[in-house]
Image 1 (cartoon, rainbow, N blue to C red):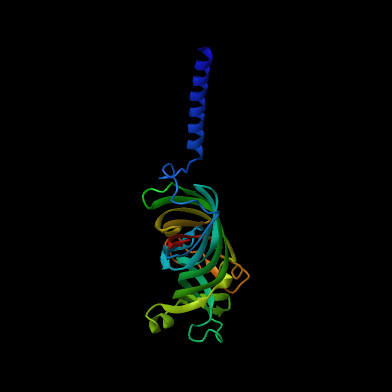
Image 2 (tube, rainbow, N blue to C red):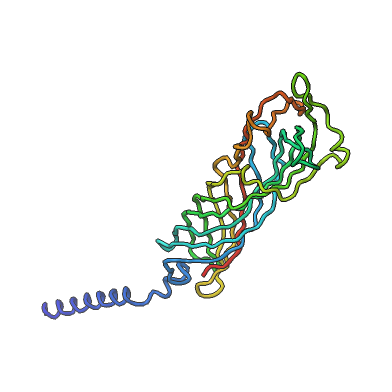
Length: 295
């Protein structure tokens, strides 16, 4: 009787063990629902467009920020997955940013014949700057589990950029003309150039690589979604705040020993020709909107 009871108990225990083992080795089809839309690959890659809104944040006391500009770019993105919901994001972005800034400058040469004229002028320069960057971003990317067809993501990291080309549109308001006298330069209010050009002379598509930095570092903060289209293909939509960290203005062509320099203005906005020059300090910021495909 006792042996029969022991045999039956052992059979029941073995039965439970067998059921537990089969449950663990059975396909986890139902439990995966909501966790992952597919078995995540180690790498995810894609292409995207980068329309942007950019502006210049002026950090000196004599220049003024005058507004933002809209620019476009494109890029390649690569996510290196190290867990279901975490990745190291990198890639290559080719985009343009810039902004509008104004300041007072001392310039040489009549705009009608600047190459042969040595007259000094004091001008108010309103510059619309466009910088062309190629950037390598490195960021941590955090992804939710798929909710319906959508996966939400956020990222935080750094970007290192190389300046490929910089151009500017300058609107120059010629205020004062300098003429050499016995006691030095005598400054008089400029009327000839202003009268002939409705007050402002505009220079288009000026190469200004010497006026901006060659390298750029930025902090990257972004949010977005991936909308699953089919299989491993997803639509990528996002927005990234690309915040410059260092001064992107190069002042090597300006200073007290140069013919051109940024002029300090008085509190009322008037110019003091005897005042010394100063260095422009500004960082460039942009909001980049991403629209592309992940594979």
